Length: 348
Image (tube, rainbow, N blue to C red; front, side, top):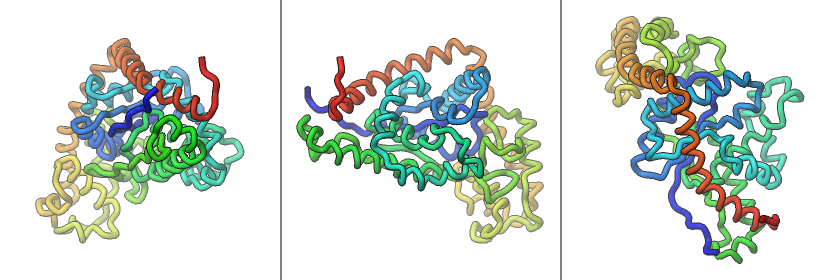
């Protein structure tokens, strides 16, 4: 059999835990949508990652569908891209186990996100939470993906995926070369794509912390499900400082909350921070927040409305996910068969 062809391919995904928020949209999804124009794209709802911590089954099903609706409402086209939930393609779990046998404990011990998520009670954390980066590597490499849009917080995990790919290629180089893969390279080195209008959107309550679904305060984030009134309330209560806005971006240094709000305005409006401050420099936060609210409502309300419309038909959401999973399996299954053959597993 001829070696599998390698072509430019994008893979990325988000967990179905809570509602997607402005940080997800500006930090990742805007880039995902743009990449549909230039790449073959696979976008996943990573529900197997979600169960590394306890989940209510009913809420998890609803969240999987809700995140899918938000993906589509934001501009992901399930006909142009492949859109599915991870658990419907068993190759993710199978390759994840193989990578558990490739990755080294020392590599996982250096992963900072496990330390942050497990906290002081590390002994009670699930093995899945610890091995999460190996499954993420499998998510990416199962499709031999070449580009991965990620936020800064996931860059370390992508570096691990590159290490796993390199070790797999090295450990089984002879078998890979025997199959006709040039240079003994079966898995590519996936490249991070860390771009977009706002690669790191911060909390509305603390400008030094990233906007997060896990923050206990609803006031810390703008959810893509928020109504216009909720957006207005949250931005009105967003933390600021006593000084007026500066005339240029250099004046935002050391003013985390002010910088965050200016960056959000710039990202939503498609302009730079200096252009925002050219209009609002010297003005009060009350005036700026009013304009920011109008802009946020104009940009986010159509997404909220469309996501609600889509969510009202869960059968259609399930159909989209099933269709995407079938298309994903068409790509994944030949890759997994090659992996199993390379490492010496018997297959029917």
